[in-house]
Length: 256
Image 1 (cartoon, one colour):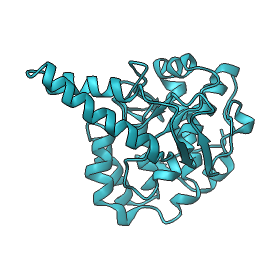
Image 2 (cartoon, one colour):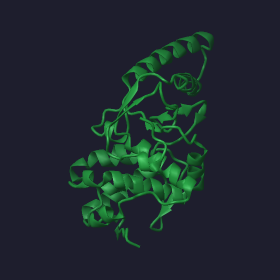
Image 3 (tube, rainbow, N blue to C red):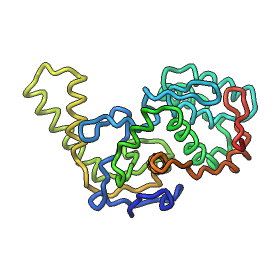
Image 4 (tube, rainbow, N blue to C red):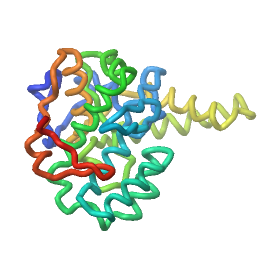
């Protein structure tokens, strides 16, 4: 399977991507991950890409996405959103707020979460030139993959893909890198060791098959292609409008 054009990307479909056949070097799992020695910062959790939406500045796309899970017109959902917004990062919003209120997530959220994510990431592209430029600098033919192999949530293969063989090989490299670094540099700092491990483990690519829907990776590719072409993504605004989404006390209109 080769994904290179927006028209060929099917959201919600499970993919089997043989990394030995395609340019899969742009796989990521955390905001700190390195690709060819460069921190690509494609994760929704990555800070440094604030954007304005409905008159509010969002520090990252994760926080706005999470607010969509609690977006009905109720005081409870509004209070949860406000608590999320007060957090210092999307990671904190997910760990300390979402996990506390999981039982209040909209029962219909799974019916529009993919389109909501596409909309949120596109808002970040439109509202932050640095993030848009980051996507434009990525290889045009590269398949972007969120590697969720090491995650434990029930949506790991909705947003990303798992690749057991690659993870096993990277674990071996990590172990060997730590061993050699501590032997050669006994006083190496934790930060320096972490960076060295990232560099060495992410040199390992082209191994195994990625399996999953990879919807976040696909969304990033859609946004990259649309930025290149100067067009809007194929967001299902009719669906989003029908869901009566409220963010921080305001009903979001998708028909203007």
